[in-house]
Amino acid sequence: MQDSPFSLSKKYSVNSYPVKASVSSMGAVMFLGIIVLIISILMFGGVFLWKKLTEGQINELNASIKRAEADFDPPFIKEVSRTAKAIDDVTKLLSGHRATSKVFKFLEDNTLVEVSFSNFNFNAANNVVTLSGEALGYSALALQFSKIEQNPMVKAATLSNIAVLDKGTIGFNLTLNLDSEVIKYK
Image (cartoon, rainbow, N blue to C red; front, side, top):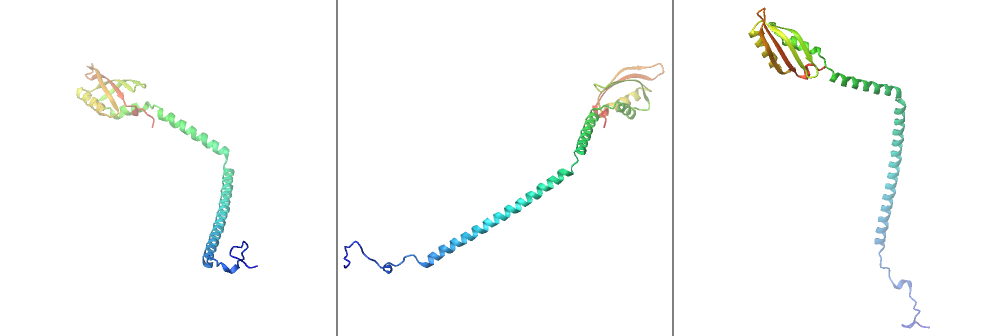
């Protein structure tokens, strides 16, 4: 039977249709695929090595932390903490402590030779000192008052009851309102 152009069973030879894809383009795609595969394998290996290295470092750090914890002496740390708290408490106590004896040092440093004090009263709540005294004359009293009044540690100074005494000296009362720094324990 001869093949007619209208026959349903045509026979074609394998060589009758040429292959359209070129071998060189298939080789390039294959080469590119192999390169991507190699890069992927290398990246996987790098990530795997990095993971192992990181795990090793974590294990070393954990061991170091355990050694450091073992080196701590809990009773010693407790004692140091207790001592630090005691030091803080004493520091707070001393910062609020009033050294009233400093008022006497202040008066000693700021009293002229021609002036003497016979009566002393100190109100620690208000930092007010009330003094009774004698001066050899009005000029000595004026110099004394000027010296006290100009002192930066004196907030206010008041002279009162100025009178000539039987001995010829000048009697007076002096009230001083002192800055709290004068009596602070430092």
